[in-house]
Length: 252
Ligand SMILES: NC(=O)c1ccc[n+]([C@@H]2O[C@H](COP(=O)([O-])OP(=O)(O)OC[C@H]3O[C@@H](n4cnc5c(N)ncnc54)[C@H](O)[C@@H]3O)[C@@H](O)[C@H]2O)c1
Image 1: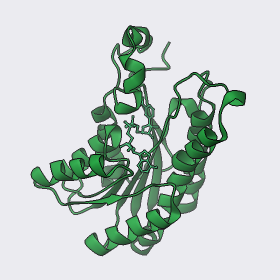
Image 2: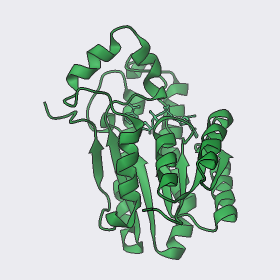
Image 3: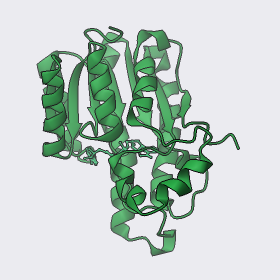
Image 4: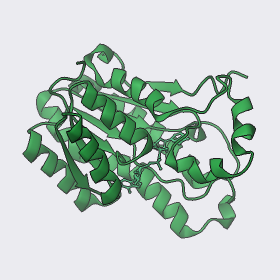
């Protein structure tokens, strides 16, 4: 049990990558705070963790709301007394590669930046004081290749993910001397609910898979493996790193 007695908040844990990370951390002995904007999805993951014998609470939270994030962290501290791990994972992709920047609504821009970038900062801001007291902690930022390269039609999402990487590096430098390790994971294209509509189109999978050297889409569990390593003390010298889990997406 590599995370025994650690307490982890996982945002967006009601589906996809967040769900897989929450389940994997639980198998490794962590106590889990499931955070999601969807009560139905969050409660269902919390019930699955309980059934598997884990310790868990679900806190319905919109990570873009400062008052809700504050409440999330207070509830977690009241229940478990500490927070060792924060996984900043909750994000939205409001349109998939169709809308250029000048065509985008203000709502899409604002919501994407609010959830995907400001949400990561807010959750970190409220968790870090408790980590500073213990002089230890691990914070993971789930980023994206769109934050590094230009993919047509992803302006707001790309801007948010580029911001996530810059925020991660700056914060990693701020807190490394205090024993708080902050790292980012860049997943490849995943088979999760975020992409469900895109991959349900006829022929969509056949279009994507030949471009991936591993010849398959990524699974949420692929990301959970890396997240687990970075959350454990085995990664004690990993700070400010960007870890690719993408089936070799940039090899060719
Ligand atoms: N799916 C991919 O191909 C892919 C690729 C690269 C990076 N990522 C990143 O991985 C992470 C997880 O993606 P996923 O594919 O599992 O997404 P998903 O859409 O399948 O699941 C996201 C979860 O986050 C929750 N959520 C959405 N907005 C929220 C908010 N404001 N507050 C709290 N919870 C909220 C949703 O209810 C949902 O349960 C995201 O940061 C995403 O940008 C995904």
